[in-house]
Image 1 (cartoon, rainbow, N blue to C red):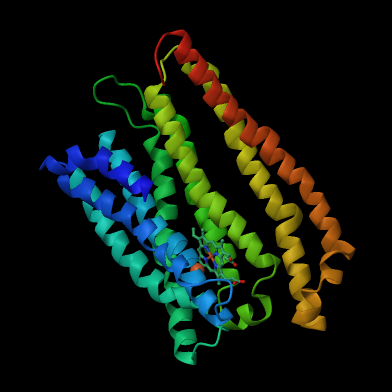
Image 2: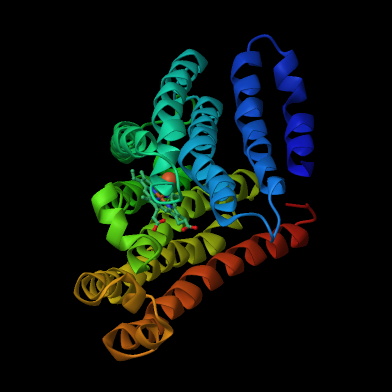
Length: 337
Ligand code: HEM
Ligand SMILES: [Fe+2]
């Protein structure tokens, strides 16, 4: 709620300006949907029936990540492009409306792919399986957007004739990573576990974790970092920036390599192994502590230390250093970042 108040304060002047009003209002509505859809978290307590808890739990998880976060992300990227003069406000507004229709049509009914086996009827299963499959449409559009980002890097600013890549290169790279992980994490790994027949055997196993990691950090983590880097570059002085940019470059590749290694070394193979065990010995067997803490499954979990270390040491640490360099650099030149 506090975040929403901050957003409102920052957007108020733009909302009052008739030229920018529509886009700024859409940005505020998309932001308001995020805390609004969190409210159902207050509808249950520790003693509530499990089916009721799971109902509201996924109302939050699913509608955030496959509904309102996606919408917010689209509006955010559209606003960045308008601010940079890359697209007109009219085009951006149209894209937002189209995306809103696509996401909300697929996402809201698709929520039932988390409720296949929580005591709801077969109608839920049929509708949810169909509508969540439709989510591939906006996802594909987003992935195509990622290709546009590649071409965008070569566009020249009309006043200064430098290419866009010169100034906001790493914002664009992080946005390309969003497109990539959207395709792999949400598209490929999400669809892998989406059909009711697959979900019946797989639900809540490591293939879910595999999808959750790739989609959640890959899409929304990278998006948050794109915005961070965009703000840092906009505020940084040109002479301080190259020192921080080196760290951002390393951090970008470290995070992506670390995340990819988590899937490759542990989550995907361990997920397939666990699914195989479900098919051989039953779901109860594959979720028992004795299975989880022994054999190849457990060895793979240890091997994941390598991936997590790459993520932390080559990904997170350099990015923190980049922020520190910019903060110290601007202090020295007497400004606040
Ligand atoms: C960027 C978009 C997405 C994000 C961030 C995301 C994230 C997640 C997360 C974190 C979970 C685990 C939730 C939990 O068990 O507590 C999950 C579960 C699931 N996701 Fe996604 N997801 C996305 C898109 C999709 C798409 C497009 C599909 C397929 C159409 C999909 C299908 C599923 C299914 C079927 C589950 C349930 C698996 C289970 O309960 O075992 N997701 N998702
Ligand atoms: Fe979902």
